[in-house]
Image 1 (cartoon, rainbow, N blue to C red):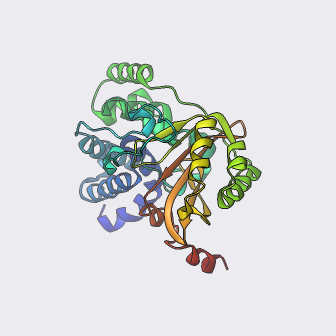
Image 2: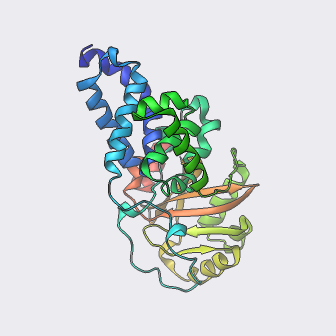
Image 3: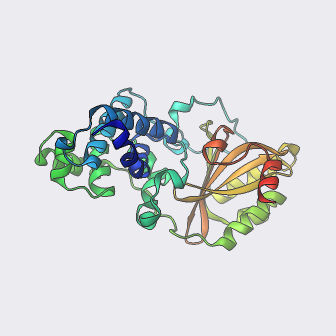
Length: 310
Protein backbone atom coordinates (compact mmCIF):
# COMPACT_ATOMS: atom_id res chain seq x y z
CA UNK A 1 0.00 0.00 0.00
CA UNK A 2 1.44 3.38 -1.03
CA UNK A 3 1.44 6.51 1.11
CA UNK A 4 -1.09 7.97 -1.34
CA UNK A 5 -3.38 4.98 -0.79
CA UNK A 6 -2.95 5.09 2.98
CA UNK A 7 -3.57 8.83 3.41
CA UNK A 8 -7.41 8.80 3.20
CA UNK A 9 -7.53 5.85 5.60
CA UNK A 10 -5.72 7.74 8.38
CA UNK A 11 -7.99 10.75 8.83
CA UNK A 12 -11.00 8.83 10.28
CA UNK A 13 -8.74 7.81 13.19
CA UNK A 14 -7.58 11.34 14.05
CA UNK A 15 -10.12 12.23 16.75
CA UNK A 16 -9.80 8.93 18.62
CA UNK A 17 -6.00 9.04 18.46
CA UNK A 18 -5.90 12.68 19.57
CA UNK A 19 -8.10 11.85 22.53
CA UNK A 20 -5.82 8.97 23.47
CA UNK A 21 -2.66 11.06 23.17
CA UNK A 22 -4.27 13.93 25.08
CA UNK A 23 -5.10 11.68 28.01
CA UNK A 24 -1.53 10.38 27.92
CA UNK A 25 0.18 13.78 27.60
CA UNK A 26 -2.16 16.35 29.20
CA UNK A 27 -1.67 18.86 26.39
CA UNK A 28 -3.79 19.29 23.28
CA UNK A 29 -0.90 20.80 21.36
CA UNK A 30 1.40 17.90 22.20
CA UNK A 31 -1.37 15.41 21.44
CA UNK A 32 -1.79 16.82 17.95
CA UNK A 33 1.98 16.72 17.41
CA UNK A 34 1.98 13.07 18.54
CA UNK A 35 -0.83 12.17 16.14
CA UNK A 36 0.89 13.91 13.26
CA UNK A 37 4.07 11.98 14.00
CA UNK A 38 1.98 8.80 14.20
CA UNK A 39 0.64 9.43 10.71
CA UNK A 40 4.12 10.14 9.37
CA UNK A 41 5.44 6.89 10.79
CA UNK A 42 2.41 5.01 9.50
CA UNK A 43 3.10 6.25 5.98
CA UNK A 44 6.63 4.89 6.32
CA UNK A 45 5.98 1.60 8.10
CA UNK A 46 2.45 0.28 7.71
CA UNK A 47 1.94 -3.01 5.94
CA UNK A 48 -1.37 -4.84 6.04
CA UNK A 49 0.60 -7.92 7.10
CA UNK A 50 1.19 -6.14 10.41
CA UNK A 51 -2.53 -6.40 11.18
CA UNK A 52 -5.40 -3.89 11.26
CA UNK A 53 -4.49 -0.26 10.64
CA UNK A 54 -6.17 0.99 13.85
CA UNK A 55 -4.09 -1.32 16.03
CA UNK A 56 -0.89 -0.27 14.26
CA UNK A 57 -1.72 3.41 14.69
CA UNK A 58 -2.27 2.95 18.43
CA UNK A 59 0.99 0.99 18.65
CA UNK A 60 2.84 3.89 17.02
CA UNK A 61 1.01 6.54 19.05
CA UNK A 62 1.74 4.73 22.31
CA UNK A 63 5.47 4.53 21.58
CA UNK A 64 5.55 8.20 20.61
CA UNK A 65 3.75 9.23 23.81
CA UNK A 66 6.02 7.07 25.96
CA UNK A 67 9.05 8.71 24.34
CA UNK A 68 7.57 12.17 25.01
CA UNK A 69 6.97 11.23 28.66
CA UNK A 70 10.54 10.21 29.46
CA UNK A 71 11.20 13.42 31.39
CA UNK A 72 10.61 13.42 35.16
CA UNK A 73 8.19 16.36 35.15
CA UNK A 74 4.46 15.63 35.07
CA UNK A 75 1.69 18.01 34.15
CA UNK A 76 -0.75 19.05 36.85
CA UNK A 77 -3.47 21.45 37.94
CA UNK A 78 -2.88 24.15 40.55
CA UNK A 79 -4.74 22.03 43.13
CA UNK A 80 -2.13 19.29 42.69
CA UNK A 81 0.78 21.64 43.34
CA UNK A 82 -0.02 23.86 46.34
CA UNK A 83 -2.57 24.29 49.15
CA UNK A 84 -5.45 26.68 48.52
CA UNK A 85 -4.48 30.33 48.80
CA UNK A 86 -5.75 32.75 51.40
CA UNK A 87 -7.74 35.66 49.91
CA UNK A 88 -5.36 38.56 49.40
CA UNK A 89 -2.31 36.35 48.88
CA UNK A 90 0.01 37.25 46.02
CA UNK A 91 -0.32 35.27 42.80
CA UNK A 92 3.36 34.37 42.87
CA UNK A 93 5.51 33.63 39.84
CA UNK A 94 3.96 31.84 36.84
CA UNK A 95 5.13 28.32 36.10
CA UNK A 96 6.36 27.22 32.66
CA UNK A 97 3.78 25.89 30.25
CA UNK A 98 5.07 22.32 30.45
CA UNK A 99 3.94 22.08 34.09
CA UNK A 100 0.23 22.42 33.32
CA UNK A 101 -2.57 20.20 32.12
CA UNK A 102 -3.95 22.30 29.28
CA UNK A 103 -7.50 22.32 27.90
CA UNK A 104 -8.46 20.79 24.59
CA UNK A 105 -11.45 21.52 22.31
CA UNK A 106 -14.16 18.87 22.43
CA UNK A 107 -14.23 18.57 18.65
CA UNK A 108 -10.60 17.44 18.58
CA UNK A 109 -10.93 14.56 21.04
CA UNK A 110 -14.59 13.49 21.33
CA UNK A 111 -16.39 11.49 18.66
CA UNK A 112 -19.97 12.82 18.40
CA UNK A 113 -21.18 9.21 18.21
CA UNK A 114 -20.03 8.38 21.74
CA UNK A 115 -19.52 11.79 23.32
CA UNK A 116 -21.89 11.04 26.21
CA UNK A 117 -19.82 7.99 27.15
CA UNK A 118 -16.33 9.47 26.79
CA UNK A 119 -16.88 13.07 27.94
CA UNK A 120 -16.01 12.26 31.55
CA UNK A 121 -12.65 10.81 30.50
CA UNK A 122 -11.33 14.12 29.14
CA UNK A 123 -12.34 16.26 32.14
CA UNK A 124 -9.43 18.31 33.43
CA UNK A 125 -9.56 16.56 36.81
CA UNK A 126 -9.49 13.09 35.25
CA UNK A 127 -6.65 13.94 32.84
CA UNK A 128 -4.70 15.49 35.72
CA UNK A 129 -5.31 12.34 37.79
CA UNK A 130 -3.93 10.22 34.95
CA UNK A 131 -0.67 12.16 35.10
CA UNK A 132 -0.03 10.67 38.56
CA UNK A 133 0.39 7.23 36.96
CA UNK A 134 3.64 5.91 35.45
CA UNK A 135 3.36 6.23 31.65
CA UNK A 136 2.93 2.52 30.87
CA UNK A 137 0.30 2.10 33.58
CA UNK A 138 -1.40 5.19 32.18
CA UNK A 139 -1.47 3.64 28.71
CA UNK A 140 -2.89 0.36 30.05
CA UNK A 141 -5.64 2.10 32.01
CA UNK A 142 -6.68 4.29 29.07
CA UNK A 143 -6.67 1.40 26.62
CA UNK A 144 -8.56 -0.97 28.93
CA UNK A 145 -10.95 1.26 30.89
CA UNK A 146 -11.51 4.18 28.49
CA UNK A 147 -11.14 2.69 25.01
CA UNK A 148 -12.32 -0.79 26.10
CA UNK A 149 -9.51 -2.78 24.50
CA UNK A 150 -9.24 -6.37 25.68
CA UNK A 151 -6.31 -7.49 27.82
CA UNK A 152 -5.06 -9.57 24.90
CA UNK A 153 -5.24 -6.64 22.45
CA UNK A 154 -3.47 -4.37 24.94
CA UNK A 155 -0.76 -6.95 25.53
CA UNK A 156 -0.05 -7.23 21.80
CA UNK A 157 0.05 -3.44 21.41
CA UNK A 158 2.48 -3.01 24.32
CA UNK A 159 4.54 -6.09 23.48
CA UNK A 160 3.92 -7.73 26.83
CA UNK A 161 1.84 -10.51 28.40
CA UNK A 162 -1.82 -10.56 29.40
CA UNK A 163 -0.77 -11.19 32.99
CA UNK A 164 1.46 -8.10 32.89
CA UNK A 165 -1.39 -6.00 31.47
CA UNK A 166 -3.81 -7.18 34.15
CA UNK A 167 -1.26 -6.47 36.88
CA UNK A 168 -0.56 -2.97 35.51
CA UNK A 169 -4.28 -2.24 35.27
CA UNK A 170 -4.85 -3.32 38.86
CA UNK A 171 -2.02 -1.09 40.09
CA UNK A 172 -3.22 1.84 37.97
CA UNK A 173 -6.79 1.60 39.26
CA UNK A 174 -5.55 1.47 42.84
CA UNK A 175 -3.25 4.47 42.38
CA UNK A 176 -5.61 6.67 40.33
CA UNK A 177 -6.77 9.59 42.51
CA UNK A 178 -10.53 9.90 42.86
CA UNK A 179 -12.26 12.63 40.85
CA UNK A 180 -15.73 14.11 41.17
CA UNK A 181 -18.28 13.37 38.50
CA UNK A 182 -19.72 16.36 36.71
CA UNK A 183 -23.04 16.87 34.94
CA UNK A 184 -23.19 15.20 31.53
CA UNK A 185 -25.61 17.88 30.35
CA UNK A 186 -25.45 21.44 31.66
CA UNK A 187 -28.51 23.65 32.01
CA UNK A 188 -28.35 26.37 29.38
CA UNK A 189 -30.08 28.74 31.78
CA UNK A 190 -27.20 28.35 34.24
CA UNK A 191 -24.70 29.27 31.54
CA UNK A 192 -26.78 32.26 30.45
CA UNK A 193 -26.90 33.48 34.06
CA UNK A 194 -23.15 32.99 34.37
CA UNK A 195 -22.43 35.03 31.24
CA UNK A 196 -24.78 37.80 32.34
CA UNK A 197 -23.31 38.00 35.84
CA UNK A 198 -19.73 37.78 34.55
CA UNK A 199 -20.13 40.52 31.97
CA UNK A 200 -21.88 42.80 34.49
CA UNK A 201 -19.37 41.84 37.19
CA UNK A 202 -22.27 41.11 39.50
CA UNK A 203 -20.46 39.40 42.37
CA UNK A 204 -23.58 38.36 44.24
CA UNK A 205 -25.06 36.76 41.12
CA UNK A 206 -21.80 35.00 40.26
CA UNK A 207 -21.36 33.61 43.76
CA UNK A 208 -24.94 32.36 43.82
CA UNK A 209 -24.06 30.00 40.95
CA UNK A 210 -21.17 28.38 42.84
CA UNK A 211 -21.08 25.23 44.93
CA UNK A 212 -20.08 25.97 48.52
CA UNK A 213 -16.84 24.03 47.94
CA UNK A 214 -16.14 25.43 44.46
CA UNK A 215 -12.58 25.97 43.26
CA UNK A 216 -11.09 28.75 41.16
CA UNK A 217 -7.64 28.72 39.57
CA UNK A 218 -5.66 30.74 37.03
CA UNK A 219 -2.86 28.89 35.24
CA UNK A 220 0.04 29.62 34.80
CA UNK A 221 -0.12 30.70 38.49
CA UNK A 222 -0.24 28.08 41.24
CA UNK A 223 -2.57 30.41 43.20
CA UNK A 224 -6.03 28.93 43.62
CA UNK A 225 -9.05 29.21 45.88
CA UNK A 226 -11.41 26.74 47.47
CA UNK A 227 -14.83 27.71 48.79
CA UNK A 228 -17.59 30.05 47.71
CA UNK A 229 -16.84 32.57 50.48
CA UNK A 230 -13.14 32.90 49.64
CA UNK A 231 -14.01 33.35 45.97
CA UNK A 232 -16.57 36.01 46.90
CA UNK A 233 -13.99 37.85 49.01
CA UNK A 234 -11.52 37.96 46.12
CA UNK A 235 -14.17 39.04 43.62
CA UNK A 236 -15.33 41.86 45.88
CA UNK A 237 -11.75 43.04 46.42
CA UNK A 238 -11.15 43.03 42.66
CA UNK A 239 -14.29 45.02 41.92
CA UNK A 240 -12.33 48.26 42.07
CA UNK A 241 -9.92 47.07 39.38
CA UNK A 242 -11.16 48.60 36.15
CA UNK A 243 -8.98 46.38 33.94
CA UNK A 244 -11.51 43.58 33.51
CA UNK A 245 -14.53 45.86 33.45
CA UNK A 246 -16.63 45.24 30.38
CA UNK A 247 -15.28 41.74 29.73
CA UNK A 248 -17.19 39.75 27.14
CA UNK A 249 -17.55 35.99 26.88
CA UNK A 250 -17.88 33.80 23.78
CA UNK A 251 -19.08 30.22 24.14
CA UNK A 252 -17.00 27.17 23.23
CA UNK A 253 -16.43 23.65 24.62
CA UNK A 254 -13.35 22.23 26.33
CA UNK A 255 -12.70 18.86 27.98
CA UNK A 256 -16.35 17.87 27.81
CA UNK A 257 -17.32 21.03 29.71
CA UNK A 258 -18.76 24.45 28.88
CA UNK A 259 -16.02 27.00 28.23
CA UNK A 260 -15.70 30.62 27.21
CA UNK A 261 -13.23 32.84 25.48
CA UNK A 262 -12.87 35.94 27.67
CA UNK A 263 -12.21 39.23 25.90
CA UNK A 264 -10.94 42.26 27.80
CA UNK A 265 -11.13 45.62 26.10
CA UNK A 266 -12.07 43.73 22.95
CA UNK A 267 -8.95 41.56 22.88
CA UNK A 268 -8.42 37.87 23.65
CA UNK A 269 -7.50 37.48 27.31
CA UNK A 270 -8.26 34.05 28.81
CA UNK A 271 -10.04 30.75 28.26
CA UNK A 272 -12.47 29.91 31.09
CA UNK A 273 -13.47 26.27 31.65
CA UNK A 274 -16.38 25.47 33.99
CA UNK A 275 -17.15 22.25 35.81
CA UNK A 276 -20.78 21.78 36.82
CA UNK A 277 -22.26 19.30 39.28
CA UNK A 278 -25.92 19.04 40.35
CA UNK A 279 -26.76 22.31 38.64
CA UNK A 280 -24.07 24.48 40.28
CA UNK A 281 -20.53 25.41 39.27
CA UNK A 282 -17.95 23.36 41.16
CA UNK A 283 -14.83 24.55 39.37
CA UNK A 284 -13.64 27.48 37.28
CA UNK A 285 -10.25 27.30 35.58
CA UNK A 286 -9.13 30.51 33.87
CA UNK A 287 -6.23 29.89 31.49
CA UNK A 288 -4.45 33.22 31.10
CA UNK A 289 -3.10 32.42 27.64
CA UNK A 290 -4.62 34.09 24.56
CA UNK A 291 -2.53 31.66 22.49
CA UNK A 292 -5.27 29.09 23.14
CA UNK A 293 -7.84 31.06 21.15
CA UNK A 294 -6.83 29.94 17.63
CA UNK A 295 -6.69 26.33 18.88
CA UNK A 296 -10.35 26.67 19.90
CA UNK A 297 -11.35 28.47 16.71
CA UNK A 298 -11.90 31.72 18.60
CA UNK A 299 -10.91 35.05 17.01
CA UNK A 300 -8.34 37.22 18.72
CA UNK A 301 -10.67 40.20 19.06
CA UNK A 302 -14.29 40.56 20.06
CA UNK A 303 -14.90 42.79 17.07
CA UNK A 304 -14.12 39.82 14.83
CA UNK A 305 -16.70 37.76 16.75
CA UNK A 306 -19.36 40.36 16.03
CA UNK A 307 -18.44 40.53 12.36
CA UNK A 308 -18.49 36.73 12.10
CA UNK A 309 -21.82 36.37 13.91
CA UNK A 310 -23.45 39.24 12.15
